[in-house]
Amino acid sequence: MFIQSCTRVCEKLCCESGFCARIGAYYYEDMVNREVSLGRIRPGDRVLCVGGGRTPFTACLLAEKTGADVTVIDHDPTVIADAEAFISSWQLLKGQIRCKWQDGQEPGHDPYDIAHIALQVTPQAKVTEAMFQLAGCEKVLCRIPKPGMQDQYPEAFVQADCEACTDRVAHRGARMAAETVLFTKDAFVKEGAVG
Image 1 (cartoon, rainbow, N blue to C red):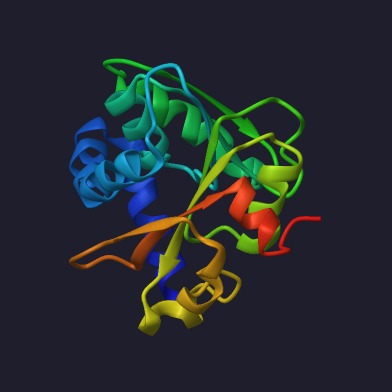
Image 2 (cartoon, one colour):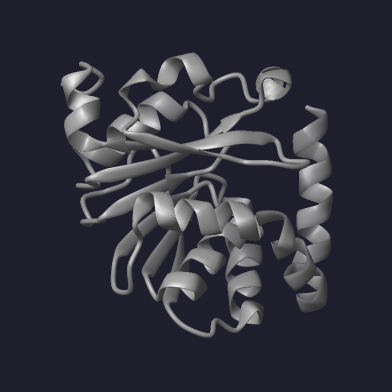
């Protein structure tokens, strides 16, 4: 798909240049600020970022802005070395990050307080369910595509799927994400999404 191909090219450039990485972070910065407030992420929280890719901007920004202990995972083993190099070159001011190869549908049983699911993660519903059932999360943040972008993210939640969400924040500007929604375990289970 076109969007994902363009993203891969930009990620490659950011992996090769710390300067490009910091400039690239501006795309995510205001979204992450809103998500930190929405999820009430605090220093010491254990955060699992699903779908970090080669350039885990969101994971780096979450750790740096909150002092959280962030683990970023991706199901593609070919991106992990680049992601680790990207994290190392980021030179975090606070917080900590570790990166590992893992599928979001099988996150293991390490306990996390909150998960952040990237827009490109598929299928978002099953990954969200795994965060509650297997990773012990009490809260999950999911980015939702803009209506005109839904065909680029066919297994992402759409706005109509989010009745079980507890809260949401809208994103403005040239973003693929229309909003980020917050699911809490209690509300997700109550809606019958988790058995």
